[in-house]
Length: 176
Image 1 (tube, rainbow, N blue to C red):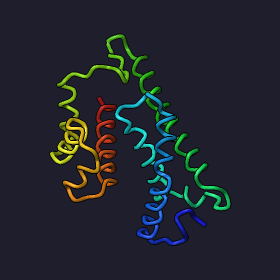
Image 2: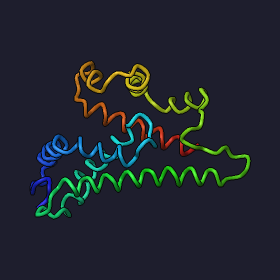
Image 3: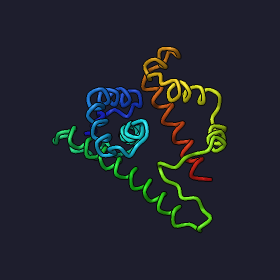
């Protein structure tokens, strides 16, 4: 039996996943924050890790592999910690590879200053709605709840869209 139930109906699975999110998201975020401890920006990488776990539960066979006779919380926290470690390894690997480049290459680190032109080039990838969402969340420091209320959507939708935007920007930044 799956932790999302036996139904193959996507709506039923999504509803079950929402129940898991409500029950475990706080603990999962705490585990991700503690694993990423100070090595992230804005705390949103921890949220990305948790969202990736929930996405995998919904879209992959991972939920079917869980032994339902065992407690769910420790398993979820282990998966989150492993995802956070994977994120840290990928960042460290990317930084190492760039630093090993030719002497004319610029070493990229998390603390590197980015020019306004580079930021503008990255933001050009975003459409107007995506830029507006980023401005409200990051520059105006509005909460996801405030933004959701303005647009008449759920808080989780705001976080999902921010995750998609960050993924798009990371992909673009890695291509440069």
